[in-house]
Length: 253
Image (cartoon, rainbow, N blue to C red; front, side, top):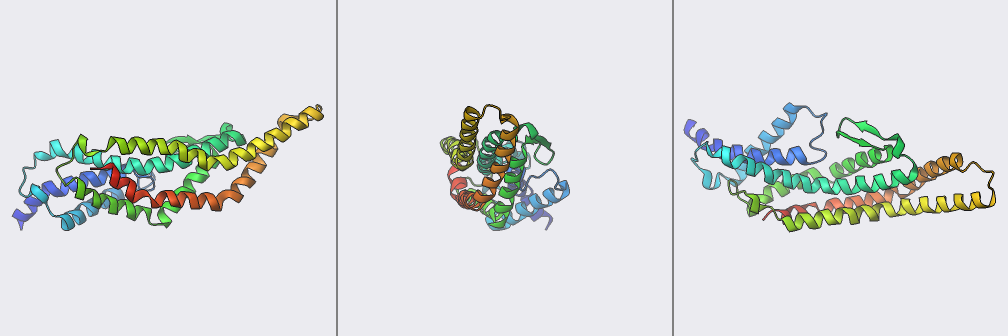
């Protein structure tokens, strides 16, 4: 029994390194409010489960000193997988920031301790909704399945810089801005119409205090438009998350 446990130390630790990278970089799983002990327990459970399902590979009875060289590479692969999911969240956040600026909420941005960044209220709202949608469609399970599937392309202990498909990541980063523009376009169009109406109003009635009226109209109609567009935006975000398994499969090779 002791011999079997000693032989499993290196592969289990390497499974844990890649799992830790995914947990550290995937939104919804890396919340700062989550207890560290819980995240460690999840990593350990994933490592043991993956070892039981995948086996030790070529690392049976491997020297534990290999961890010094291989663990950072395994961690890098895991972080890359989680970072690709983070890019999908970033597309929603960028779209919300575009809309928040047009709605006049940029000046109301506050520091969010859970994400460690400064967000406008609409951006924070969209982030929370995105996390809830991600969890409601079992996105976290898809990430775990993608983690397990990554070992079909990069077996345990075989990770390296060349294991990451840089071209796929660049395509994903390019798609981030395109997706953000498409998500934000309806709200930006509404703000454009409101600003055009305000411009015509000032042109024909110069006595109107356009700054006071403008803030009320842009914020009020902006929130109303966001509420009306929320079902379609939720469907678009859900469609993005449904593509997560294919995206993560293309990132490792």
